[in-house]
View 1 (cartoon, rainbow over the protein chains, first blue to last red):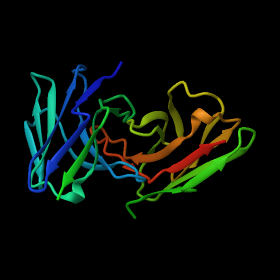
View 2: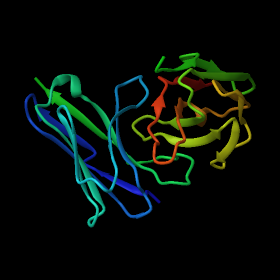
View 3: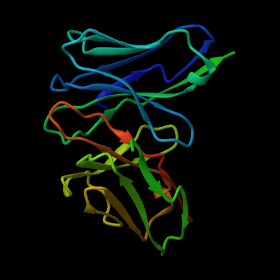
Length: 113
Length: 114
């Protein structure tokens, strides 16, 4: 049973456009929601993370929006660049789980020149 | 040092071989993890070590044997693997303070079982 559902599976966006990836969860005990970026042949790298007491967090061109009542969170990549082409995973974790991350299925983002 | 170093980067082994994957970090993190990742799939948790003790084993077959010799090192011993075990094996570390679950992943070991 997938505890974090991620969409879309893939995304093509033009350079300068906005990439939007959505995730939904069921377990209200989750209290940490990170996004990871993974390039081919590399391990995932932490991009940005949010906690449920905050509705939005911005770091550079990357923004997480969090809707606690809807149990949804999303990643917005503003001014998308070809170097942003990668697979993006949302994830969730909770206290007492030894830091175990529940990953979404991933979204492959391709930014065209 | 803000890296998790994994060796080897690539490994090809036969089904009767014994091999080991190594992971090292010097960030003072006291939680270390092994994940398995198949192509176009998210990482799947295998094991969690917290303060050098095994905290989680996600029902991993006994042909995978983890070891945490000290707070900086994590090994994964492999024996009698199957072709379906071919995958990217990722090590990660974090500081298990309350509310801080930010992982640092290594680049992984690409394992091929023939």
